[in-house]
Image 1 (cartoon, one colour):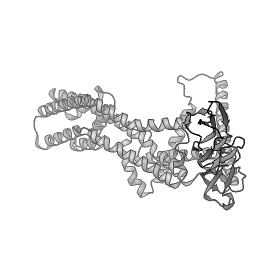
Image 2 (cartoon, one colour):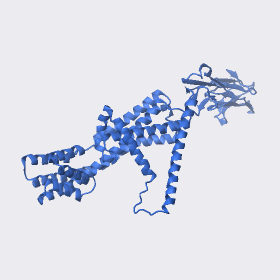
Image 3 (cartoon, one colour):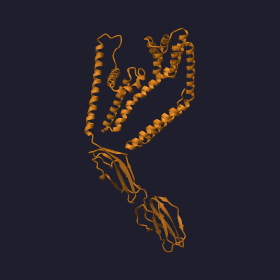
Image 4 (tube, helix red, strand yellow):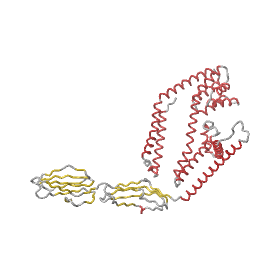
Length: 497
């Protein structure tokens, strides 16, 4: 408890102050008010001349004004000194949420540190850097403490990662990448020079009827296919890869016309994976850093499975187009049977009349039957390639007709009517579920859009996820849950015909 003082300025304190004002003799009554940071409080009247205790509990610069009145109602103004009350702790901010540097390099830990106080800049800043061995790689935590004149204390913990010095290794990698780029640039210049020489010589030679010059893209494409064939030949020795390659046999001739077996697709995925790893290494080398284990595995996995998206998309597009044209093929075959044509002739007519995947498949079946394969075998192979229920019905019907006999025109008329009703029902179901499918896509994209908006507003918001092992575990768990969520919603919304 302090007495009212007109001259003394109190040092900042984080405690409430009780100020006693004692009026002079002859004071009949008086009134007072408290001024905090130029905000004037209400007057409080005291109807006698007794002392009063005034409580100051607001953060800021407090001042007391008192007006006393004697019996003749003469007033006297008294103003106290400034009482500084500081109950707010200092604020410690860092521009880097995680500090990372290599052993042997100099780092100014206070450069990214900002300490502010609402009263004074006379702060006491301490840290635990003396307790951390900066020459030993590992993960640590720097604790900064700031104390102001009033005794308020603020604590800030910053993760610290000390990495081994990879300067020599980075220098070697940089030289290798630079040499590779130089060789690549030299080959491009050499190729351009040969093109210019070819153009000069064409002025003195007879131009062929057909331009047989090959573009640089065609050269790269040819080299890529050649590299795929070489890697595929080496992978043929692996039993595991041989079994895995069987899953890609259905993409042969559909996803890529240059690939002749499933192993070619595995070789292509391997090349893309290596390309992703090279890009990741190049990116880290520019930043004068080396890849961590997860930074190596993630591009490798993404690069290996990225081509599957293209393969699946092309295969589904192929199947949808085939499924859409199948009814036309059945109608043409039925008309051919009505005119007395055989199955082989009907397949040939379909291959000639229609275009696209259905013509390609029926031409393949026509060639198989021309080479002596039975109808059952030809359509069974067609059903195994496409895996469509309509083709299963067609294969079963032809197999029964081939073994037991019957009116093929009536059978195909029934199949034609069944496929027409099925296609009509499918289109109606697609129209009825269009709004639901839009909602599903919105549910898929809203979380990604939400993450993108947060990243644009606060780029460092998700940085803690990649700063520790626990954060990475949570990140992969979120991706797993999101993938499970998409799978469940698609299963619920899928309409089976």
